Length: 391
Image (cartoon, rainbow, N blue to C red; front, side, top):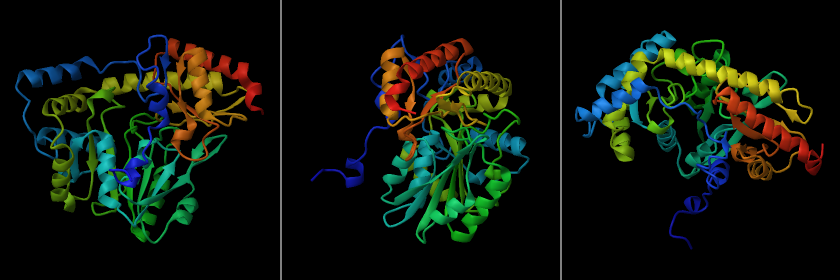
């Protein structure tokens, strides 16, 4: 009998780190396995953190986030979505993943049931599993024009004890972007059946035909069963800073303060100052990064989209592609082979939920020359080994 709870004892490393840790930092590898590009955080954001340290921002902060950062987030969201967000709804606990973990802990427990819209980032099901709840997945459907979620599939998966549904749009790994109409329909279903939508909107600025992807914040009431998670990592190239926020109903302000104090005390004060700088002066950087991501998507679509051995549902947002290799049965063996023979780091499809073992994920948030070289190597591997997995 183990020392830990059974669900903790059963945890395994996800497929991304399982592959990446074997060659992490190897200069010969082109790393497309993680959700970040090759651009460092913009200089003015780094300078804001340095200045904050020089000014002595090394003490505890408010457990729900420093007042100036929460005010900056409110102004940012109000301007982006045309809303007037109650500041009492905002909490800055630390990273966006911490916010997802808190949301799962707030809504699920032993005997309850959760749903995850999949394909999904693997740490989400770990966050659900450690609550003690049971959960199922609702699969996005793929077609020639990309991915979509059918509301009837969600409805069919609901149980009387369902209390939370996780949805990520724009989506890691598929690039699916949920329409405003689909969000309204899902929110109506949540109101009807009494489950909470945990909406991960961290890729909200990584869309290519608008300033931002549709947000549940544009249509939800203050008291709706909704927790929205967002953050700085993707829009501002701040992956290593671990700074995100969450929006909850205002009546839970006290509970959010207590939970934040338990999980992380507060996000580091000097990093919060960097967040303020990003929101106040970062729009040019957001636009420049989005232009780079668009070039990456065009490169992936051009090189993989028409290949006879690969199916590539069109990624509408985020900065990932989730191709399917025809006949592939083991995504883990595939990405290990690409790494060993071609020095390209990919993420295996199986780790993004059930039914994905013919897929792999790649991040295209990289410089064009580097990405083109990586894709050429992947195609070389696919063509060299096509006979090994059939048709």
